[in-house]
Image 1 (cartoon, rainbow over the protein chains, first blue to last red):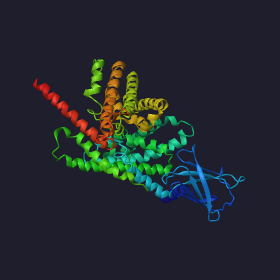
Image 2: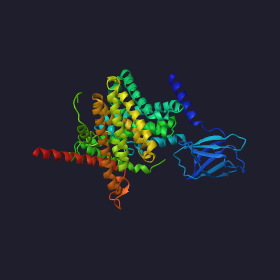
Image 3: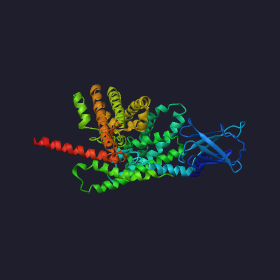
Image 4: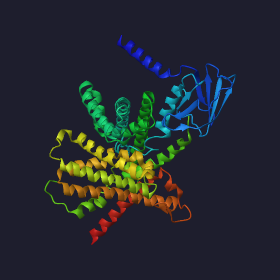
Length: 307
Length: 207
């Protein structure tokens, strides 16, 4: 019974996330370097004046309107093509407002890629293209500390994904429902760090009581995670980009997976390094840094990729 | 380190700069050392922010060390650090907005730099205000010095300039300006310092 309820709840959440389009605008897409194409349910009249009736902003910076250079109607007014002065990217989301005539109210529409495609691109972006360890150089203390053996690397990786995902959701909720309505954004660093510290402590206590086996496996790493840069960087990034709940989840999962991947790769190499004949002064950390540099060079190859 | 032990100013500064240098010796807080050292100025600004946060939270903790309960000391330290980080974050955003843009994320991340909390735990929570102040100074300066040292190395080799001023008309070794080169630079410099230390010790042993 409770499982069916859970599914119903999940379906409801997914549906509400999808159902943002209702009204005259049916669909929108980024169709060129400077072009946005809108499909309309009701045709606009051919003599429709676009000046002053169309507004486009990026979702991250809603206060800066983008300049619309021209708008043309195609297919008997069912398709509207907007040409913008600045280049647009299919990665980001745009908020459009459209007023069909002076009497009617303006209609709002959020234009972005297909929802799942967007989530997928966020996951891949955080895990590979902008890998936190090899492309953003964060979380290095834990990275060098816990990559000695494969076993610790896997344990650390899994506990990190768990804590990262849960705390990102928590931080997202607190920021959007408490800090933003109260205009307390300047307190974000203190709040986020506080939330993460409390959350890790909470998880530690709960795991100890509820699942001693899992606690034995992950307990050691939980405390370490608090001092990881990534765990604070992800909330800061998701707040900066104005992500919604699902995008935040995708970012957290992707960055957690990317960190786990980096740890595992590094652990594989370092286990072999123990048998290698390395110059004495390079033993230990210096050679680990050089290896990480080689990995970073390899990951540089992902930087041209985009979805 | 027990309470009542006497520390002199010079000894504390030397400790932070050389003997327990945060980057090259303790190997703590490596993230900024890799990411923010492709030129000297970023290293200097981030080092300045770290110096400020380290000194301020060292002093705060050593003032309140008798009131902070043992069991909740870590959350208390984190809140103290986060407060001073917010102060330096807003200060930098207000007075150096141009440079701040490049290092914004890292300034906020000072909260989780291991070096700061480890100094609070190891030193400031057991010593009086004055030695704690100089310990913070030493550690902060050591951190700044290390960042700038790597920065000088990478900026000169990578783009032939220092502090944005062009010294050479060509780029000697552009590789060092690329982000991944930070790892190589730290690894090589660490090995170099180890080697120098060994040579120095051997030379002193012979004498």
